[in-house]
Image 1 (cartoon, rainbow, N blue to C red):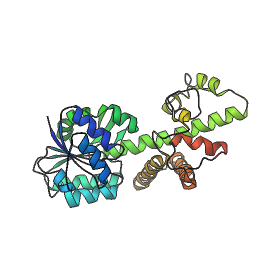
Image 2: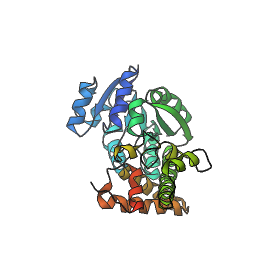
Image 3: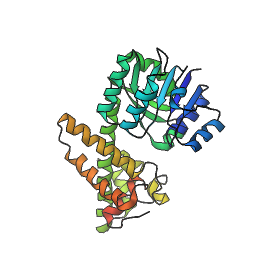
Length: 297
């Protein structure tokens, strides 16, 4: 059993916490939202009065926060001043690469080991304990953190040094966002030209255009029964979250001096989609914009 402190109990943090409890770990937790703390307490978590208390006397700290500014603030104002020497720090937020590396360097300055470990798999993966963790940080820290990460995920990959977990995450989601748009355009064109969507799926899912966006998240109702398209695009991964990750990818590309025209186009399209009031739909709902039938909440 490991004693773990968690900060951030939202859509991802709460089910991750539940899987840690299921694995027999002792967990202390904090969130600014009282209702989330109440749910965690009811599940058997020791809820603390503030973030600093959540990380005292624990072996591992896990944070799951909205953005880089929140991560920097929590670590500089609460975590670093309250953790015991030797505590392993794991940030599973999806944030910009620069901030991940900056906060990781601050940890090193204080004699602490830190991992950036963003996830893929969405809320469903968090609930099922099947997340993919993309992990950046020292080998020794990865080995220490691996058993705890395995309680929350199915695939844990060490991507290299500090910040490389975030690099992997933004590259992955840039590819996914651009690919989803291409799949949506293909189905829209097929419909206009008189090709049945099931026939197109049967062909493409076994041909050279086969991909995750098509096979698991097909953006039209029917071919993939579990896809959000069959639930009026109720989100597994919201358009707002996809836009956030595409913007992070563009920021990283700018910093690295890399041209990513497809990624930039995807970011622009998801920006239009979200700005029209569709942030909470699944990201595959962008097919409606491509079809000229923009949904609105």
